[in-house]
Picture 1: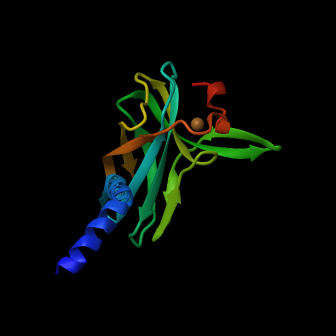
Picture 2: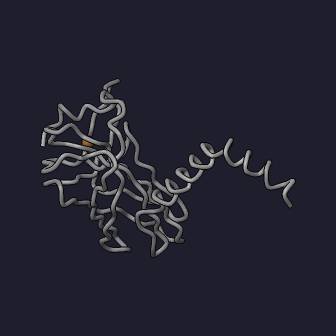
Length: 170
Ligand SMILES: [Cu+2]
């Protein structure tokens, strides 16, 4: 079908950029596949890139609980930091404060989404820079699922003033 072939090539050339972008997007989707899935839990997440000398960082998880029983995130740790503590931001007297939280409950058939300004995993005593594009290893201990190892993508630094982490005391 030569009459179809020529327009097809033209269309392909014109849309090549778009196609490449779709391909990259598709790859991106593949890369952003859940960091861990099993036992009714699906864990995804990201961390924020840090400056070279930074000693603290933050990671944010989205945890889906597809089971009929509530689950609890009890603790976290990372090979690249002395501590990886569960933290939350709360408003106290009109001031945003960071507080450690004991556990993070993920309701049955529900989810928890950590995000800047809210729940996060606070990385303290970083022994390496969190470089954009690299993976951050996290070890997460759940009440029922036990300890699982995940790798989350390190994204750009974004808004630097979002957290008061610089003032954070270990
Ligand atoms: Cu924090």
